[in-house]
Amino acid sequence: VQLQASGGGLVQAGGSLRLSCVASGRTFSSYNMGWFRQAPGKEREFDAAISRSGGSTYYADSVKGRFTISRDNAKNTVYLQMNSLKPEDTAVYYCAARAPGAAEYGFWGQGTLVTVSS
Image 1 (cartoon, rainbow, N blue to C red):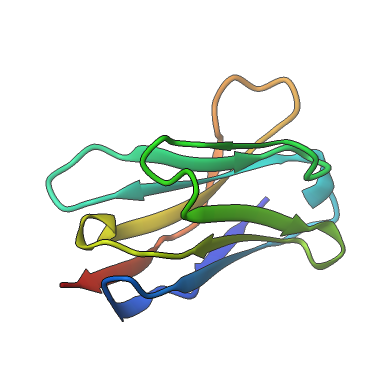
Image 2: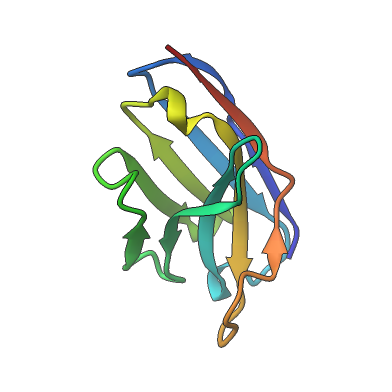
């Protein structure tokens, strides 16, 4: 599966952005999906994940209550709604797909930059 992320940009602290990630192929609904971030000079870290059906979601403590992950399998798209953004949320955000039975996310998008100004 190929992933294309978009929706990043510059926003003031307290603002909102919605990231989108469109997947190619006809088997999108077979993949668990996740969003990750990587800030300059830091390791990539997990933000949120969603199950194949969208029935289960998981969040890092740092974004719980502020970010919402969702998916539309008919559109082959996963979203990350980000509210109450903080300067420390500044990073390149990546969507990723994990195949059924796989322990790791094996497919990654190209990333979209989110910059939160104070």
